[in-house]
Length: 265
Image 1: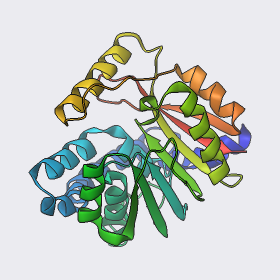
Image 2 (image 1 turned 60 degrees about the vertical axis):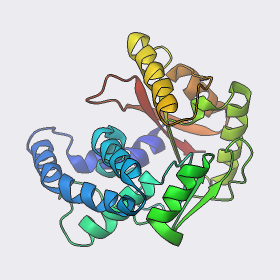
Image 3 (image 1 turned 45 degrees about the vertical axis):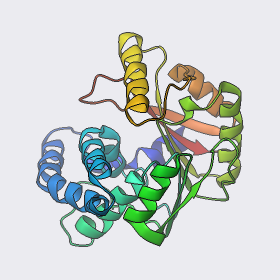
């Protein structure tokens, strides 16, 4: 685990372990930068339509995982990123805005690691409408394929991101996805996997209810969810060749979400 702590935790060290002045500086820098970053990331969705645009604003503004990816430097230095279940491409839009709106213009928070600047970013998404929106908003720079992650070809990458998606995949198929993710990564490659903690009590049940409500609202109907506790997820990841640590990822929300930061070993 020392290697895991050194690499995945490098962002923490740059944020300042003292938690005092450096933490306050990071927060102040983020507050001053957030509006510009949000505007830049969401602007491409205006041409898609009102729902796509306002969904992007709400998700990018309210979901703590997007800030954490930048603040902790989780994707910094990764050249080829694969986003499984990418939806309308929000992560790609966010990273593009971070690099080109903030980092290159020297307005990046001073205490944060460098912004991710991937050479290529690919997405796989099952829902045709979301694929169309991603293509319309982000153009050919973001390669998105319509396919089921349970059977799609992943190719190779040095970082794979799966945010709030794997619980829609049947339990046995989850194992196959993890096996193929590991095969797509080199030793030292990164998997960011956000899941809801099935041992999270009321917060977990609320998370499930919101998941189903969102699916119904977006016209996808009711879907069976296949969830596990964080310890069960970590055990599985260990069996498939990953060294992991868990980062709570529901700050400011009522959900039971946890981000698993896993290095391929």
